[in-house]
Length: 564
Figure 1: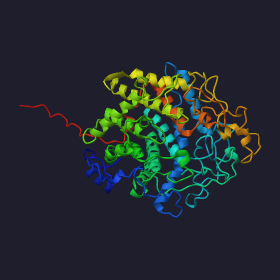
Figure 2 (figure 1 turned 90 degrees about the vertical axis):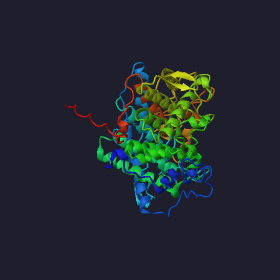
Figure 3 (figure 1 turned 60 degrees about the vertical axis):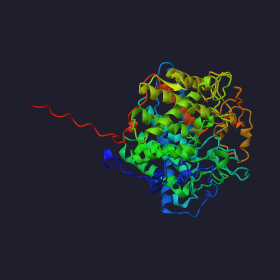
C-alpha cells in the first residue's frame, strides 16, 4: 500500500513523540506515554465541549457517524452463515444463524424491507439532529441492549469482534441514553418501543477519549481487511481508521472518554486506554503494513501501562473494556506465522507467553477462576452477566488452538506441563454447550435455540406488544413488570446468564439475568464461527497479512553454472 522500499520498511508515520519514546524505551521513568488513568489527575475530560468546532473534529465526527450507521450493518451481512462441521454441525451452525438475527432486532434508523424482524420498525430518525455539523448523520447503527441507547464504545468493540471472526474464518458518538439518577424522560427512565420514543435524545461530543478512538480505529481497520476485495471501499475505511487514530494518539486527548460523564460512566466506564493502543496499533499494522504501527504495538510502555502482564485473573478476561488479552493473541499470530525477529521479538515473545498463561488460566486444574458446580467458568468474578465474558474466552481458546495447529505445534506449556490442543478445544466446546443447554437448568441461554430458553428477556421492543398502541414513557412500565412472556421472541439474543449457583431467574426486571447486549452477542457469533470451523477447515493463515510488505529481502537467484 506504500511505495516505499520494502526492505527498508514502509513509510513511517510515527509521531515525534513516538521516536522520543523509542529513545527512552529501556527507561523506567520520564516516559511521556506514562499518563495512564491511574496517575492522570490534572487533566479534565471535557466530555461535553460544545465549543470545539474545528475541521479536524468535524472529519472525526463524520467517520464516527459512518461507523455507527453503515459499517455495523455491512459487517453482519458479511459474516459466514453456512459453516458446518462434524460433529456436531447442527447445534453450533443453527445457533450461529440465530445469533446473527439479534443484530437485526437491534437496528436503529430506517429499516430495510428484508430486515426479517416483523415487530420492529423505523426508529431514531432524528438522532443527531442536535449536532449541526452532522445533521441527520447519526441515524442508524444499533441499540446497545434492552434499552434504546447507542453506546459507541461497546458497539465499536462488537464490530471489531465480528470482523475478526470473518478475517480468521473467511472460508467457512453514542446517541440517547440517560444521566444516572435522572427523572427526566430518557432511555432508562422510560419503557417504550424504540419506534415510539418521543423524548429528547441528545447526542454527545467528546474532546478527549483515546480509548474510544482507539477502539473505533480497530473497528475500521478490521473492516478494511474484511472488504479488501473492494479496493475503493477498503481504502475509505483505512482513511477513516487513520483519522480516528490520529485523534487517539493526540497528546491532548489522552484521558478516558467516560471520565466525569454521568451519561456514560455508570454503564460503560473505561478503566484506561493503553489496551486500546495495543489493540488499535496491531490492527492498523495488519490493515496498512506500516512498520511504525508494529513498532508501537511492541513498545514495552504499552503493556506496562495496560498492566497486560500483571498476574491477576481480571487481566486475562477479554471484554469491551479490556482488549489486552486479544491484542496479545493477535500479535502472537504474527510471531507464529511471520516471525519478524529483531527488534520486535522480545515483546512478541512476551505476548506469546502471556497468551499461553491466559489459556492455562481457563483450564479448571489451575484454579485461576472459580467454576460453578454445573461446569461454567466464572470470568465475571462476581459481577453480573457472566456469559459475555465466557463467549469471548471460547473464541480466544478456539482461535489459539487453531493458530498452534496451523503452525504445526501440537501443544503448549502451562508451567512445566504440556497441554495438548484438544484440552483447550474441550474447554471451548464445554462452555458453549453449557450456554446452549447442557447445564443444570437444562435450558439454552440463547433465545429461540433449543426447547427451553428465556421468555422474559429484559428488552423494551420485545416485551411491548406491537398492537398499534403507543405506550407513554411511564405507561410502558406495565410490560416491564408483567409476569407474562414477551409477546415477541428476540431470536438469537444471548442473555446475561445464570448466577454462581447455576440458577437462572427468568424475570424481566432482573436485567442481570435477562438482558442481552450487543458486545455479548458479537462474542457469541465469533465463538460459534470458530467452533463451526474447528474440525473442518482451520484459520485463513495469510489473508490478514496481505497488506504487510516483505519483512526480509528475497534471496538472490543462484549464480549460473560455472563454465570452464
